[in-house]
Length: 117
Image (cartoon, rainbow, N blue to C red; front, side, top):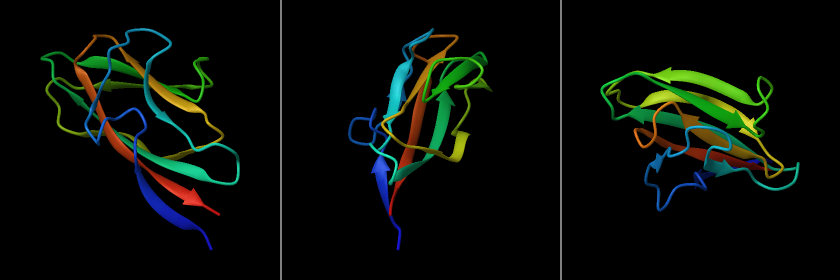
């Protein structure tokens, strides 16, 4: 029977938000998935935009190659928590990174449900 364990995003310090400092690839590291292919991380990722302008955010999903590995979203100005990743899966030590159109205004929050076989 599979088990679930909630994990901090690996790019977070003690559960704090992750400030997106990168404005181009390779982005700021948000999470490195569990190694191997028998276990899997289910990611829930949210963003906050602290600036007074909308900001384009690019998530590099396991790789930096567009369009295969990129998810793009505009995060509205002065937004609260906005859901970016609704439980998508990642494994095999692939890395979720992010970069934004403006540095130091997007803060990423979230968690991983680590599913073990």
